Length: 475
Ligand SMILES: Cc1cc2nc3c(=O)[nH]c(=O)nc-3n(C[C@H](O)[C@H](O)[C@H](O)COP(=O)(O)OP(=O)(O)OC[C@H]3O[C@@H](n4cnc5c(N)ncnc54)[C@H](O)[C@@H]3O)c2cc1C
Image 1 (cartoon, rainbow, N blue to C red):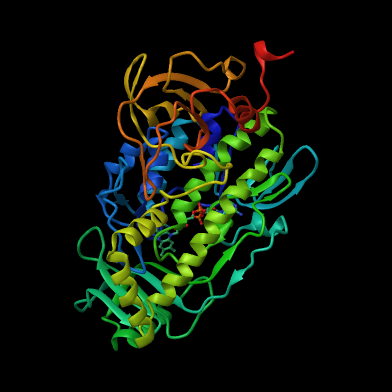
Image 2 (cartoon, rainbow, N blue to C red; image 1 turned 135 degrees about the horizontal axis):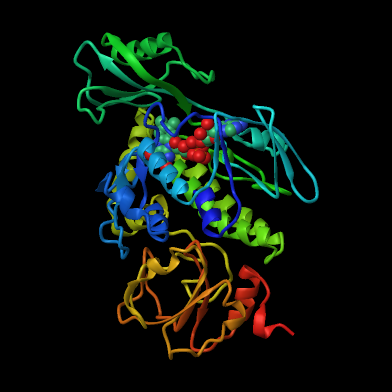
C-alpha cells in the first residue's frame, strides 16, 4: 500500500521482499473494515476487493457483532476476504504502478547518514535510498536495527491456528474454554478445516509442531480427530507491543513492524493499510523537498495513538472472552450494553475505523475527520467525492460561490474543484454537522481545513501540510 502511495506521487520506490511470490501459506486476516474499504475507494480500487469477497457486517467487539448498516457512509459494512486475496490484489496494483519488487532477498542491515540510508541485502547487493520504511512485520529487523524500543504486554495466552484435514467429523463451531475461544470452521472449499485452539501453556516458539497441534486438540476436545494434511500451522498470542517511535531519522515503521496485538477484532492489517496511507503522501513531499522533514513527525503523532487504542481494545477483548464465570458475566453485561444504540454506534465506529479523529485543532467537527464520500455536482458533471482523490493529491473543494478561493500558488500540488452538494452532512456517531462552504482534503481523505465563507486559515493549512507557495505568489 505504501509503495503504491509513493508511486502515485511519482516517487522512485522499490520493495525488498523475502518471499518468492505473494502467495501466502494460510489465510491470516479475514477481511476489511469499512474505513479501509473507503481508503481503497479513495484510490479507485475498492471494487477489485468488493468483487472478490463477501460484503457483510464484520465489525465486532469480543465476538459481539456490531451492525453498522445504519451508518451514514457508502460502505456501511465490512468485507470478508482473506489476506491471501488482499495481498494478491495489492501486489497486482503495485505491479500496474511499475514498482520494482526485489524478491527472494532479505534486508540484512542498514546504515543511515545525513542524506540517506545504505541498505544491505542478503544477495550481497547494496541499495542507497533517501528513506527506508520497515514494513517487515512484527519481528521487524528494521525496527530492531534502528534501535527502536517495542514496549508492551507479554502474552497471557497463546493460540494455534491451522488449516487441516480431519479423518473424523470435526466439532464445528465455537467452544469457550477457561482462557479463550476455540473454533473449527469450514475453509473456502467447504471440506477442509480451519482450527483455532487455545494452547494448554503459553508457548513462544515461532513455529509450532504437529505434536503441539495434537496436544492442543486433545486438551480442548479430548481427541485429535485424526488430523492430517496440515497445510498451515501457526502460533499467535495476545502479546501487545508498539514501537516507542515510528521514526528514527531516515527510518520509519509501518504496519505490524510498528504494532502487534491479538487478531481479535480484526484490526492489524486494517491499521497497517491506514498507516501507509497516512505516511505515503507526507514522505513523498519530504522526498520532493516540498515540505520539511518535520512533516514526517506528524505521522507518529497521528498514527501512534490510533494503534495504542487498538492495543488496549484487544487486551480488553481477550479478557472478556475468557471462559471463567466472572469473565462470562462481564461478557454478558457488555453484550447487553452493546445492543443499545449509542454504545453500538460508538464501538461500531471505533472497530470499523470510521471515528478516527486526528487532532488538527479546534473548530468545525469535520476538522481532522474523514471526509464523507459526497455525491457532488461538479463543473464536469456528477461525481462521487472519493473519485477526486484517486491521484492521491490534496483537494480544495469549494462548495460556495465558484472561483472565490485563490490557491493558484499551490496549483502544482493541490486540486481545486468547484462543486454543488445538496444533501445532508452527517458523520458516524456525531450525527448532523453544519454544512461547510469549502474544505481542504488531504490525500489520505482527512479534512485539514474547513472554510465557513472566507479563506481564513487556508493558506496556513496549505503551507503546513503541502509546503510553502510557489509560482505566482512567490516574491
Ligand atoms: C491468525 C491471524 C488472523 C488475523 N486476522 C486479521 C483480521 O481479521 N483483520 C486484520 O486486519 N488483521 C488480521 N491479522 C493481522 C494481519 O495478518 C497483520 O496485521 C498483517 O499481515 C500485517 O501486515 P504487514 O505488511 O505489516 O506485515 P506482514 O504481513 O508480516 O508482512 C511483512 C513482510 O515483510 C517480509 N519481511 C520480513 N522481514 C524481511 C526482511 N528482513 N527483508 C525482506 N522482507 C522481509 C515478510 O516476508 C512479509 O512478507 C491476523 C493475523 C493473524 C496471525
